[in-house]
Image 1 (cartoon, rainbow, N blue to C red):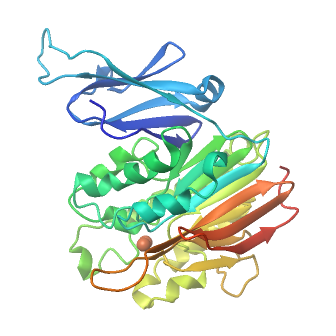
Image 2 (image 1 turned 90 degrees about the vertical axis):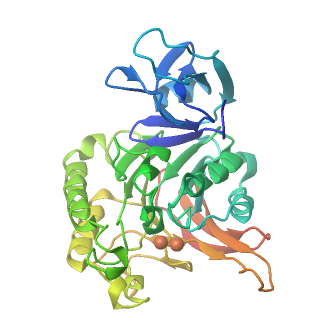
Length: 377
Ligand SMILES: [Fe+2]
Ligand SMILES: [Fe+2]
């Protein structure tokens, strides 16, 4: 039996359709009569309730519908296993509709709140092209239920019918379920940093990992982000080496960076010295990103709203792209008075212009950025 609606994650040149089931069993996705199995090394995965099938963007963009399929398997016997009947759920899929430009909604820092976040992210209604979930979606990854907040939000906002981009945040890395967290999101074979491409949009997702040094006592030795970040430096260099098939590929008109932590800004020192880490590495990342002609970098993490253009004194390391820090959760604690409020960012790219507005679940809206003449859309 299917549990929640699927999430269609954009990674590389594929959609990774992830869906959960109430019991163990085998699963696959069908697109236009073709089967995309949830398999590993030639074997159907079954000892899990989280399934992933990978479909090329070109296939799903053309077909515009898919079906998730499942057969329960109570016991994985070595011979003659007894499978349940085929369960099948069909979904329509609407790829990015470029006829009215790109409408992207950005959320981060939901910290396990769902209702207000869903209301906020519904800003574009049916015009939504891409939902960006930029980290700290669960408060921590203590249990599977925490992690399923990702599906509760994405399922309600997209209904499994629009692409979702997920960048991991530092709170997603905390708790008993933190290692399994990547089973629930789109990744490059487990890696939480990758590039993506669909139509005229190209982008890069980076993951700073934790926000303090690995040696911080709070982590008790469970965090090892320094070598993880070092691997991302090499990844950034590879993206530049492959520029012709990445950000300079034919047809790319809009280039977006997504990273939970705004490492390329002075905001890093705002909350105290212990958060201002890895200056040398982040300077190198920024120099490498500067090669990519990014039109915008999307960040969260600060729980406040900021928008900077290149040259702003709040920008670090000579970043040559605008930065939007687009999430502000304001949730009332038990016993407190007031209304829950969640601010995200509505981004539109059309007529050569990128605009971003902060919007919330109560109908408030404020212009954050207006970038004319940047893009060929
Ligand atoms: Fe946060
Ligand atoms: Fe954060």
